[in-house]
Amino acid sequence: MHSTRSIRRRVETGRETPTVVASAVADLHGRDVTEIESLYEAVDPDALGRLFAHPSERDRDGTGRIVFPMRSGWVAVRDDDWVVASDDDRGFRPPNRSSSEGVHRTRHDWDAGRTLSSSLLLAVDDVPDTGSRQELLLEVVDPDALDRVFRPVDGDVRRESGWLTFSFRGFIATVSACGLITIAHDRREFTESGS
Figure 1 (tube, rainbow, N blue to C red):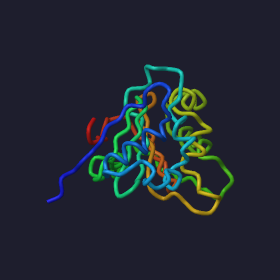
Figure 2 (cartoon, rainbow, N blue to C red):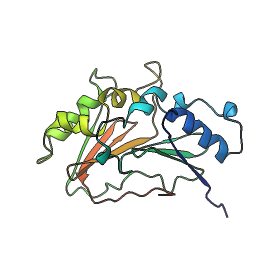
Figure 3 (spheres, helix red, strand yellow):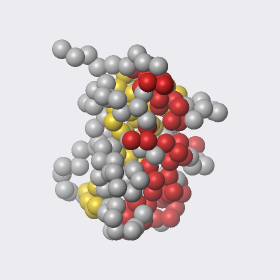
């Protein structure tokens, strides 16, 4: 029987998010940080560090998170500056959107020339009562970081695993590395190991 191990680290002022991620993954696997594969294979490290960099501290409640696979495990970076690395994906699954009631789904096409943030804004426009779309991105995520975080590596190699989720105005948006975008009423359906 496999027991789940997880490591939690806080991104302290002055430390870079990618450095904290690498350290947590190295500690989880009992390795030196120099032995850990590049974070770049899973997400854009610069974008990862800026994704939840928004001015309002009230929005930083841990419900916003990006989750991606790394070194035989999973990593979650939360909007409240916590990083969790685990050797099991059970606590790192995206919100269950199997019920079609009240769930809007669309897909971002990486080859269409549109940015991921534009695809998300178009999806938000299709959902009644979501409010100003410009305000949405400025309140919760950095649009440039969103555009880059799952963007294919060198234009060709796709980052197929991982997802980002955040709440806004009573809704939850989930954006998958494969391009699936869902918007649903916020029912706090997701969980994370170590939360």
